[in-house]
Length: 518
Image (cartoon, rainbow, N blue to C red; front, side):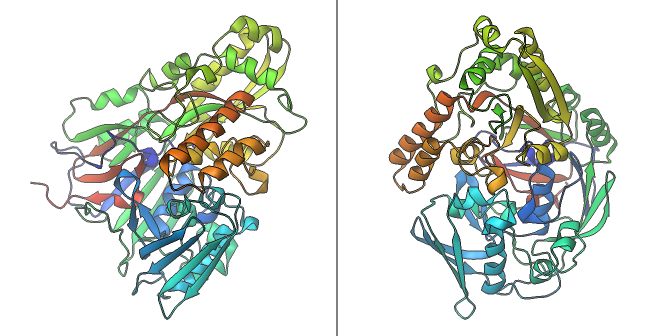
């Protein structure tokens, strides 16, 4: 999902990068507090139910996962100190000793197994379930004496351990599991397993998080973190890029994302470091549920693809900083399609012959508002009768994951949390959102999903890529989605603070106050 919050950061030269401003006065401080921007209010504090970027940000800070992603898409220890794979359906997690919840409850294998069981249950409806398990079910068996949790999947899924890095899989402590409503509201003081607790909440104003004094589960990254974890985190919902820039320059914010021309205000400005990250892709997605314009109409879907220009879309949303796509993931993703012939070419004349008079309802996040308007206008030019809604991130996520028929085209901003092709493919095939999956189209595409399943049984890289190639050919032939462009995200960090970016992923809990400010 699209995240224009500071944690939208990702790929920078495919390497571990620490952003730490080294200039003069801007933000330089010995403070123990860090202020960062969110795009909008979190929709929930229940990690399993997180759906939008700001939900993921808060979940990462409040709830630990058993493993974390490290550089080069490897794994680092979180709540688990070790893990092993018997095969693609059987795993063992060794849980660190001496860890506790925010109310002092011991985090033992039983606590971990109970939380993961809830995350993996279809009835929970977690958006991360399909990423971690596919369509399989999971059995988690704790052994408190041995300090382990054994995992058995009903079907192979080789992305399982990577799936356990998702913030949605964050370990919820017993107090939170006992009070789901309070968990979602963020009011259960003993629910948290992560480094921070939620100390105050003012929607549309600020969310204050406090560092736990007894926290011991910092991730074991190959390159150790430097600096000190801030004792306080102030998360501020800000929807306007110019306002984020103003507050960074004024010292009211220490870390922010500015994805428009306002980022130029930090060019050669002492006291700030700016880096461009890319972990978000954009593409058109069709609602194929009965009663919508595109149900059982691949001809209409192809005509939409012929009506739009992905380069024009890219220029509009990122001033040309992005790159056009040939699939739903970026060119840096392993196994991604490179065959341009599989993607429909622009042909407005052919599109007009099919789309004239067709009523189309477009929905998208307001973070892509100008892009949404471009798509609407491109379709109007070929004769379609178009309405468009640009919603705030939380409402857009709610509408497009509800499984309803009140939209026809979704301008999807896809934050690839796992850095895998499978993560994005599951947006356009496989279990639908109304059935606990990630697929927003409402059409499973059994053939395409079968190839994804085949890929998840493979340990050989070539065999895995061959299966994923077939999956991509399937959705491109059906035109379930229309690839558009990547969305680069400039991250600005003020002097005295640092964050860790590695590969296409940014871990919110790596924010640090620099201790060496000489």
